[in-house]
Length: 164
Image 1 (tube, one colour):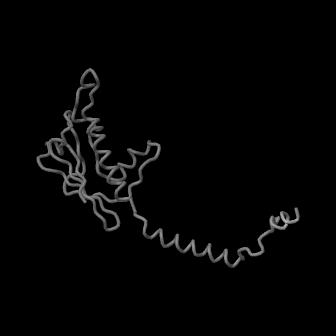
Image 2 (cartoon, rainbow, N blue to C red):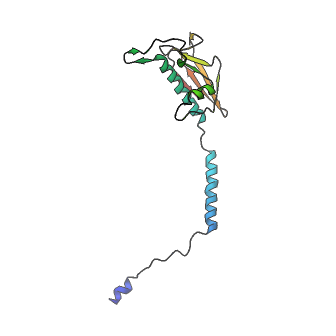
């Protein structure tokens, strides 16, 4: 029995004698802070992409509003005076239209166009400007921090292409 007691050593838990010192903890916290600060410089800024996607969504929404149909046919007679079928490419106007949303969009980019800043859609969803159907694509340029995104609204179909 003595042999068994000698072979099995009873170990008791003892508290750590060596732990981290306050200087070591502060050094690690400072190091993590420096790495986090450097890492934020390499994060992508998605403001231009968000503005581009928002503008594409608004164009498609206006096109759907212009068609206005239900399961039984067209909901009401279409008229060119219907302002809900036009989109004005002014950032303040776009923000005010979206102000009733749960999370309103805040525009960071600037919008540049060569022609009229208003685009409308007829009852077939075809784009027109100044009472005439578009015969060539409409280019819309968004710029933010020296980056540029170009949108093209195709004639007749109103399809939107995002170009880099």
